[in-house]
Length: 233
Image (cartoon, rainbow, N blue to C red; front, top):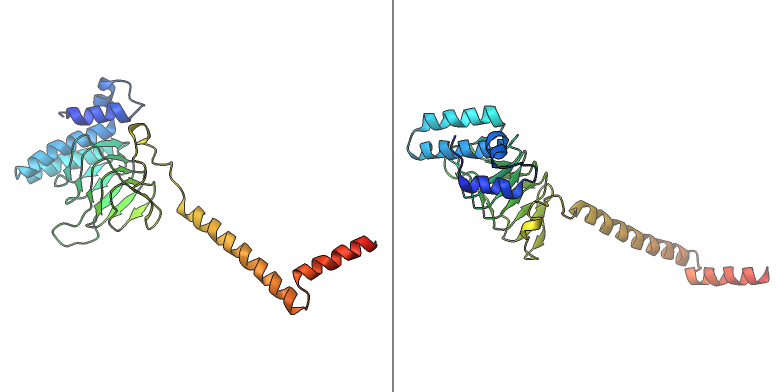
């Protein structure tokens, strides 16, 4: 199977485990999956649907990655570990996109027509991220591992959680040395728990103050009484 030079270059740049180009061509399942997709897509555009589907089926059996021949994928596409990746028929993926194992670009409708996501350029989709429906993921977006994205995501954003929440937007652009750090993202649930605990502490102080007032002794009076008692002793 012919290997696209741009896809090979992406593997060499983004996968530190690869020994050399020969190693990548022979044993990198992500590169194999992308190369087989390229051939199946070419046949699909020529109207040779059954031949395209045959290559698609073979790729799935060999690599564990299922990219429909009808999907449109840009240059320098990188899949790190092909296992479990699913990209639907009407999905569109931009240039310089990186995805990890278990990523799904899926549909939510059984109707014909555009029903899969559109993904912009330089997007990173973390392991087991799920992006569903005819939605748009903008350029330079990071999607955290395990996230479920059901709505459009604007450019230059970081999204995490189920359902996905934007936790960074229009911040410092990701540089090349950090482009694979899809695990280095804040946890919006932890942030919510911290805020909730702070609110609970604040309310607890108010409740204690009200109890003191109801008993006829303010917290300040109680403290003063304790102080006098201590001096007498």
